[in-house]
Image (tube, rainbow, N blue to C red; front, top):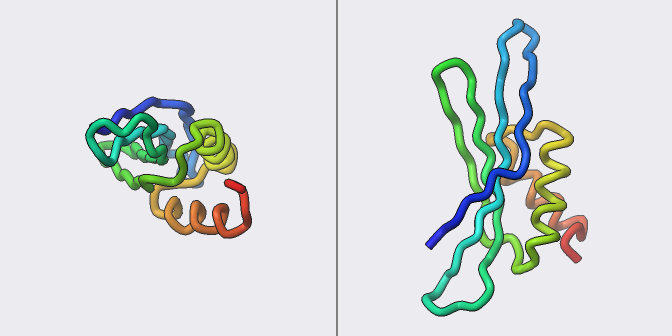
Amino acid sequence: MKHLQLLFSNEVCLEDDRKMKLDYCLTADYAQAGQPVPYYGIRITKHLENLEETEEVCGISYSKDKVVSMTEKLFRYEVTPVHLVEIVDDLITQGVLL
C-alpha cells in the first residue's frame, strides 16, 4: 500500500504571466506484505490552468531523511515532473544518497 505526504508546494510565475503550481510529495511503499520499513520515493505534480501532470520515482531509498532532503532540493530549484527522473538519477549518481 502506498502513502503520500505533501512536503512542499511552489507557485511559479511563467514568462507569459500564467501561474504554475508544483507539489512535491514523499511516497512510502511497502513492497511486500509485512515489510517493516517502506521504500521512499518522490512524486511531483504540476498544476497549470486546468491541466495536471504527474511524475513519480519509487523506491529511491529506505532512508526517509535522505529522500526528504532530495525532495527539498527539487523544490528549491523548481524541478517539474518532466525532469524528475533524470535529475533523481543524476543526484544518485553524484552520491547524494551515500
